[in-house]
Image (cartoon, rainbow, N blue to C red):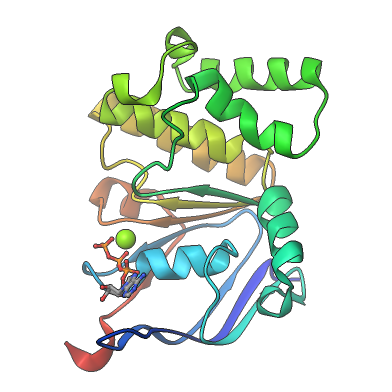
Length: 221
Ligand SMILES: Nc1ncnc2c1ncn2[C@@H]1O[C@H](COP(=O)(O)OP(=O)(O)OP(=O)(O)O)[C@@H](O)[C@H]1O
Ligand SMILES: [Mg+2]
């Protein structure tokens, strides 16, 4: 069975001007697959990722995850879906500045009611694998963009999600961390049969993925 099937997906933002961000998107994603979402600024990459992650409700269309249409879920069910199935690495990190790096990474595990010994072990492992252990007690504003990005990746991976959605995840990284972190995400995905979907312009990433989904600007702009 396909992991994720997107059918006739539309996202229209209404406001003073109406913006068609996604226009009739049809895509399928398999387990173990690494897919890039490419396209110019404003073509809907972030909108698509946040719809897949259950953060944004599409205007119409279906998103089947393991056969279940997540657009039909209640708000409470969507919270559970996001918590248990999805790791979303936000373009602007979304870290909590009043919490330490350790606490930021521990938060999704606390919300999922994990035991404290498990949380400690898991957070330490994540910090180590992303090479940010030394910032454990530091607060996000004191970290560089690349360091904050690695914390955001640790937060997204905390609950060991089946679906990893990454919005420009290497934009702030130097070449060496970019290669290392991308390999970490890709290896995890392939070994554990997860699905990794990356919104990116980065030619280095585009070379490494199984497949590229190209988005165009709606409204024919
Ligand atoms: N909350 C919102 N309200 C209104 N319009 C929005 C909102 N979010 C996005 N848009 C519009 O929807 C379109 C798609 O935006 P989106 O952020 O998904 O594009 P993107 O491909 O991620 O762009 P970028 O490469 O700059 O990150 C844009 O025209 C944007 O202005
Ligand atoms: Mg974006």
